Amino acid sequence: MALSNRKKASHWGAFFVACLLALPVFAQSHDDPCVMPAGAEAVKTQRVTDGDTLRLRDGRRVRLIGINSPELGRNGKPSEPYAQAARRALQALAEDATLYLVTGSEATDRYGRTLGYLFDEQGRNLEAQLLARGMGYAVAIPPNVAMVACHAAAEQVARNAHLGLWQEQPVVATSDLRSGGFHLVRGKVSAVNRAGNTLWVDLEGPLTLRFVAADSEAFGSLPDRSWIGAELELRGWIIDRQNWGGMRPGFRRFMLNVRHPLQIRRL
Image (cartoon, rainbow, N blue to C red):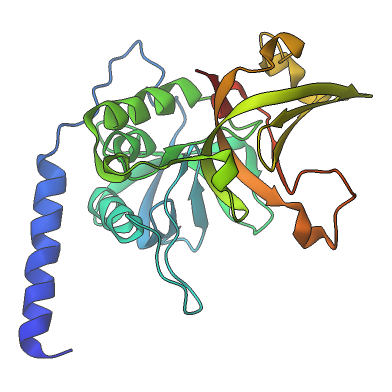
């Protein structure tokens, strides 16, 4: 990169951080669900990997609980919209600062990363700060759901104000699904069926929802046949069953495991 271009990039980076820090801070009070729990561990950041992952100076990799930020481009693929902005936002909050880590009840993921919540020196939750600025989507993956109410409220701030990724229209119709991965989708229920301990809810288009008995306690009530025709908004990691080596005839191509009420909203 030429020197003049490096200077421009540096100036734009500084401008972004200044704008980020000028944004209103997501309000927290001592009686809300965002308060830092007792016993948090003081940590320092070595490097921010992306909008929801960082490495600590002690070598641990931390995957933030409760937020899914857009994916950075890898292996020749372009970055998703706002992926770079999300990384810069986390850098502004996490680098050169003392943070406080609280690990989840499930402490690590299958990649060996520590699953945790991070807080700043004022006790403010970093995931909530990012969500309130539209730098990711609130997610709930049991059993790490202690701060779901905090994160859902923070996301709603950005959604109402059309900040960050909410400037776009991230919710797609089920009929427009073309790939697996994390999605926000909207569609109408076409069928509800139970098979043993599994409840299947088919939507118009190529998507089916799967509820299992082990997660039923999280829901006040599960969908039944009265939901047929209802429009739903859904979120989560959608599985493309074509990648399983073939599908049985009549089965829908895409499947979403619904494990927490945050994933499903009746419109």
